[in-house]
Length: 327
Image (cartoon, rainbow, N blue to C red; front, side):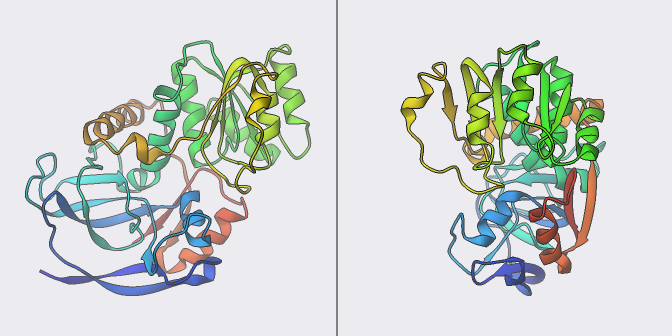
């Protein structure tokens, strides 16, 4: 069976105006694949990096890395999903900005009934990112202190709640007093307005001069040096995004004098590449949401045809919480 699905596609890298809405054919799933009819899809900064060419791709290409919906067909060898199942995913390859698609099944997860399709679309990439930051990157225990940049964003608000549920002190940064209050309301112990305060000095003051155990930084170029200076000796710098641009090359030798610091540049897709690991991570995320420890906040909704405007809003840092595209 072949049908068509409205899909947001780019034929060249560039600004938000490069998007084209096209009808694309959707066939039947092959071995290890499913066909899913989307209810909503999520918006993330990786989509911006791919669109702009920071992360180059072969073109033309549909964008989008997470979505939720209903399984319409199941290919040979797929045992964890069946036709009619509610499901959600964060996965490669891109292609979630569409009404329906055929895709590998390994990273598609059964969605509990207690989680809406909108929440499922808004939470998978961001929530699984928080899961690996707190549980798979470096040991963290109750009482540890984390510095988290962009604490009022989609990943940040999940991280604030996750930290609170794990007994971890989270110091956030955000660009307005309102965003700082949002982070505090969601579980941050402190939040610093980076536009009006010297955030690195403030972090040192809040930790009695000691610094934090871990920095979780998706901002990139603008915050890199200050983040290193905010760590205590033997601390871990997790650089997991580039919202302000990529971190420029730096001298690895500076990590020694700064306190034998550690640094890593992970991606979610390494962590979820194994089917069993991905499903286990999702189960922990779903449990946090179903229990109420983590609430998924969706502050922006755009119809698929307005995907360019959604990207403009995200890039201008005018968003809070999660953003979804509705179908």
